[in-house]
Amino acid sequence: MTSTFRVQHIDHVELFVPDFEAALEWYREVLGLVPVEKARVWAEAGEPHMISSDGGKTMLALFRGAGPGEREYVGHIRVAFRVDAAGFMDFLNHIERVAVKNRHGDPLTRDQVIDHDLAWSIYFRDPWGNPYEVTSYDYAEIQHVLASAA
Image (tube, rainbow, N blue to C red; front, top):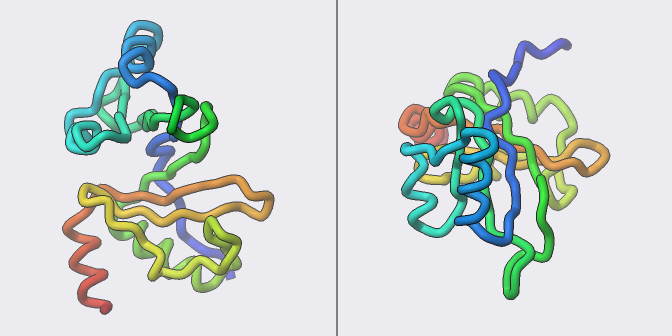
């Protein structure tokens, strides 16, 4: 059976940097990427710093890495695809019909959805280990549907 599920577009790419201030300045100066206002609460909590040139439609998510006492790597780590609330629920139904593995190599299930307070996400890997995320900012609508299903 062919699925009708489709992502809307890439939401963000996670990038690990050793210095937030230097990275924010470099990406602003070189690419015109600026902090996304709707994600400011995450930056104020420490990370990620979401930056964009289009008001947050496509973003880089800056996380701290490769410094003393921090993550040991720098670079891109995951691609996140954005969907609306209906698409998010379609994806949760879709994973019941296809073999998808989570970050640990176990079957991906709908109970692995992560509540980020502003968005809902679910994390998984392709058969070769590449990490991906499906995310939606239709927070209240998804929260209602998930609560109704519980």
